Image (cartoon, rainbow, N blue to C red; front, side, top):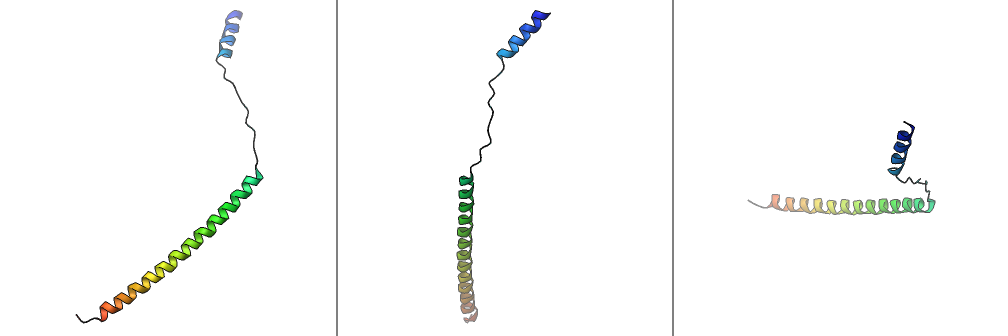
Length: 75
């Protein structure tokens, strides 16, 4: 019985895998750069949104001018 237990432990130890611990890495420089990049992206996105709003307002103006022209034309 004792030899069976020893053999079982030997067989189990053969199939045991290698285990590696992982360390927590903190990189404050990378974190700060990520925050800076995110803020730059927000500024760029808001600038793009403002440009789109201006373009849409110009489109509405042109649409209204065309509508006034064609509504005022004799049929």
